[in-house]
Image (cartoon, rainbow, N blue to C red; front, side, top):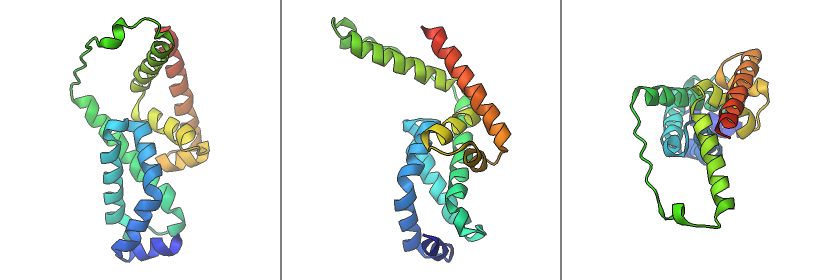
Amino acid sequence: MQEVIREAQGGRAEAFEVLVEHYGPNIYRLAAAIVGPDEARDIAQETFIAAWRDLPGLRDPDRFEPWLRRILVNRSRNALRSRQRRPTISLSVPGPADHLAGAVDFRDAADARQALDGAFATLSGDQRAVIALHYGADLSISEAAASMGIRAGTAKSRLNAALRRLRAAVEGQS
């Protein structure tokens, strides 16, 4: 893959397309884990646009994947900060499922998912990123820290704080 990266660094668009096809699914999943599925496609696209623009400056092609993840994390942080500045409107409209009897298992799972989504929404962008990198992308704490541009101890601290916050939010919903 290093040869393809070098070709893309030289401006060969076809080589960069190979990189997008190879890394695209993982970048999208990671974006969805951090910013949610509604914005994931845009964040992934912004990540690859920035990577194409900045690729000639990448010194070590062996570090392409962590470099790409770092771009994604930074784009995700920016999107989450921007989202906090915009007011959000949430409308709850009763649907036909509200009147169904015997759907307890489904409704319990939906309630649990809603509680977890709500708890996840209370996390900072950095906390979301470290959870997504560590648990979603299955990276070690050190690899997650490198992707975020922080020290491993800082990543551990943010992960611990995020997990405490998630537990408290979910337990508070019980």
